[in-house]
Length: 343
Ligand code: NAD
Ligand code: UDP
Ligand code: UDP
Image 1 (cartoon, rainbow, N blue to C red):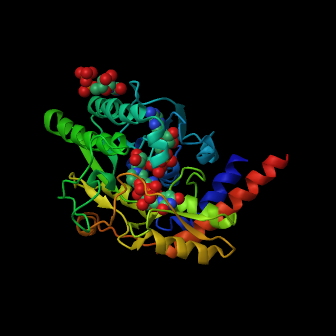
Image 2: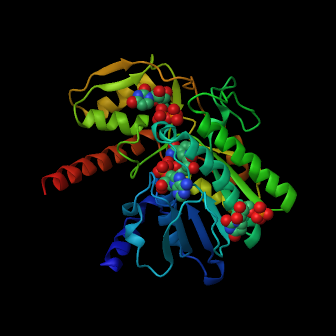
C-alpha cells in the first residue's frame, strides 16, 4: 500500500516536473521543523522524491499527520512529535526551520507560545545547527515589514511594526529569529539562510485557519457571505506553494546568506480577490464588508530583484491557475468531511 501511494505521488509529479533523483553522494540528512504543516509537507514531498533522508519534527499545533502520512514507513522518512521550545539532539546536515503558527487567528490564539516558538525554538534550532556544523534556513515572513511605508518592499527596508499590537507576537518573533540567525552567524560562524516569505496558498492549507484564501474559497463553495475585512482596498500578493518550495530549496543550496524575499509580485486588492474567487467558484455568495482588523497592513508586494539575481528564481505558477487547483482541493476536502460526518 505504501509503494502504491508513493508511486502515485511520483506519477503526480507533474507538480514538481523538475525534480531530479540524486546521486547517492549528494544525498543529505535534512531536518524540517514544522514539516507536518502546509508549506513543510510540500517541502517534505519534494525532498523525499529527490531521495534525501528527511526527519520532521512537529508538535501538531496547526500541522497534521495526514499531510505526511504517505511517507510513514518509508526508510528515508522519520516523523517526531516534538515541541521545538525544548532542546533537540539529532544528527543532520541541513535544517529547514518552519515551525511556527502562521495565520493571524492561529498565532494570536496563544501569543506567548508564538513568541516562545520564535525565540526559544529558533535558539534551539540554531544551537543544533552550530553543534552539527550544518546549515539552517529560517522561514521568515513579509510581516517583518509590518504596515510598510515603502512599496514594493525590498530587503533593505527595515519595516514598520507595532511592537505591542495584536500581530506583534508573530512579527517581532520573526524579527528576533532573524536577529538570532545573524548573531549565530557572526559569533559562531553558523551558516544561515533567511527567506522572507510572502502570502502563500495551495492544497493542504488548513480549511479553517482564517486566512483570506481559505476563508473566501470555503465561503464561496458553501454559498455563504464572502467576508471582506475593512474596505477591501488593502492589497496582498499571492504565490502558489510549489513556487515557494522551489525558492526555499534554491536558497538553502545557494551561497547567498542575506535575507531574501520569496513571493509572487502579482498584487490584488482584497475586494478584487473576493470577486475573482466568487466568479471562479460561481454560486450565490454575496460579498459583505466586516470591521477592519487592527494593524492590518494596507499593502504588500515583494520586490524580487534579488531572488531573480542570486537564485535565478521567479514564480512560475500564475495566481489564477493556483487558485483553480486550490478550489478543487477544498471541494474534495468538503466532500471528504461531509462523508466522514455521515459515517
Ligand atoms: P502551518 O501552520 O501549516 O505550519 C507550521 C507548522 O509548525 C505546523 O505543522 C505546526 O504544528 C508546527 N509548529 C508550530 N509550533 C511548533 C512548535 N513549538 N514545535 C514544533 N512544531 C511547531 O503554516 P505554514 O503556512 O506551513 O507556514 C510555515 C512557515 O512559513 C512558518 O514559519 C510561517 O511563519 C512561514 N510563512 C508562511 C507564510 C504563508 O503564507 N503560508 C507566509 C510567510 C511565512
Ligand atoms: N541545543 C539543542 N540541540 C543541540 C545543541 C543545542 O537543542 O544539538 C540547544 C541548547 O539546549 C541551547 C540552545 O540550543 O538551549 C542554544 O545552544 P548554544 O550551544 O548556542 O547555547 P548554550 O547551550 O551554550 O546555552
Ligand atoms: N481578510 C479578509 N477576509 C477574511 C480574511 C482575511 O478580508 O475572511 C483580509 C485581511 O484583513 C488582510 C488580507 O485579507 O487584509 C490577508 O489576510 P490573511 O489573514 O490571509 O494574511 P495576512 O497577510 O494578513 O497575514
